Image (cartoon, rainbow, N blue to C red):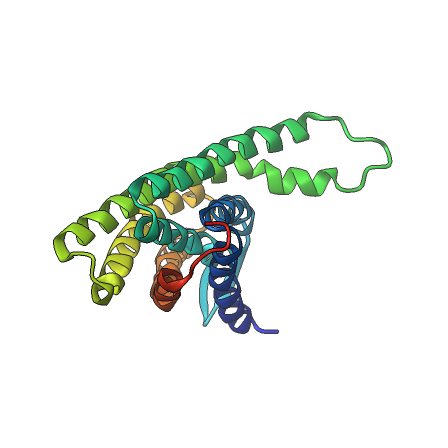
Length: 227
């Protein structure tokens, strides 16, 4: 299966999963996806892939989908719950960073066969996670702030939902991409590849941000079982 088909499939799967968890578990389902997305995204972002002839990382779709979570929380529950999702994810990433490094401190058994692979993956975790922590905390708080700023300026209009959704997400995704890419990958790849990753990372995040617009309209109509 081509990377392009996988990309389209993951966009639909992850954004659809946000709605499914929301329907089943209410805002707790959204909190759960935010945590899941940030943890798995920190692993997936280590993998460099080609999409439509461009170099990017495999974590873009998953990470970008977490912005749909905060936008739904902002739309349905308010700023406080959206910020709560950010802090839940941030706290979990700190524990993830600590946990992965503690795992590496164990001396492997003579029969162990996975330690070297864990060293390769988790060895990247400190730089990736710290970059992600800084980018995530800045961009997600900016996303929540801009969402409610646009809301105040335009009113609680369903017709302007696309504006506060896309306006806040596209701006905050740009800030996140610049912060994360420089902190995580500067000096790791050749300069040309690095800037290609920076540009395409934002490009694919922007695609996901635009693609999530119909999903937030659907979320506005959902009455969760748990709520």
